[in-house]
Length: 122
Image 1 (tube, rainbow, N blue to C red):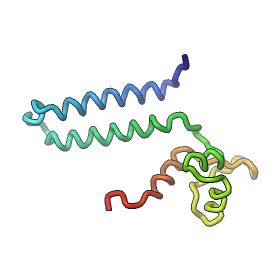
Image 2 (image 1 turned 180 degrees about the vertical axis):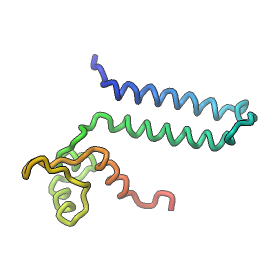
Image 3 (image 1 turned 45 degrees about the horizontal axis):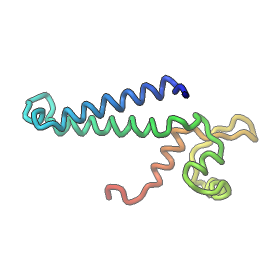
């Protein structure tokens, strides 16, 4: 039995809370209530929070600082292709601990990968 880090446990709990809240907001009896915000706006806010929490949870096992190989594996390309993209200026920002020790911050890598999406919501 593996124990998860407190951050992962908190994220899992948040996802469960948000899923329950969304279920409540989608219930027909709730839709007739009057509140400060229309139910659809509240529901949209909850969905966005739920998706953000699920995305964090999906990548919680990645190290905070990733090697070029880990970045390449994450996006499904060969390490050599990643280095070619880097040479062409298309890579996430790098953190240089020493001249030979270069890492990529997980959140910056995920943002970089997300920015490469095309056709979403156009």
